[in-house]
Image (cartoon, rainbow, N blue to C red; front, side):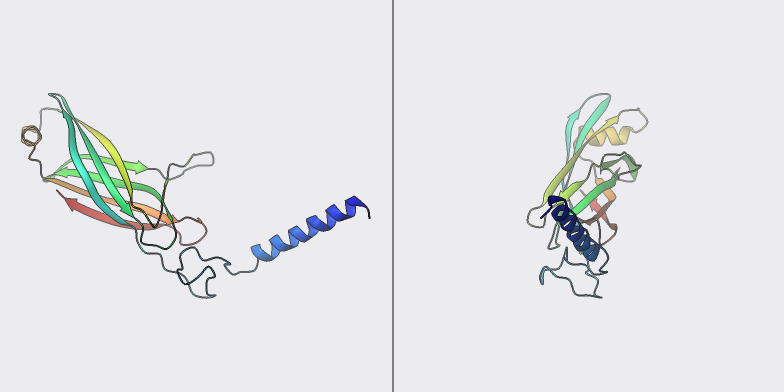
Length: 181
């Protein structure tokens, strides 16, 4: 038999299988169902929200003109499969004074942007951290006094944006949080 015919038949069979899988209209694999690997037609699986905890907020270094803080979040995934955490957006307050805002991770934007996301597995929490430098402007002596005496009353408010690891189901999900320390 002619080898070209075998190659054409193989390519046609592969294309046929891809067409059936792509246009069947049903999901073959469930990304979050614990009941098994096959999802039930017509039933949309529910995604449980990830759990965010303030793991640590500490003063690393304090100088006359600036202070360096480190904030750590503990992220836990209660879903059966892993999720992609795109980013955590947070604001840091000392009493009612907003002293900093930041993000950990990033949302991909544009055609050639590289992603900076985190895969959160279901069997182990992930610790994410960020360093914050706050400059002393001289306008907030009470705040700097609390830092020097190591008695600040912190509040952290924020949001986390995540989705399933398949990027095909579940869309974007959001969870908000607020902690005091």
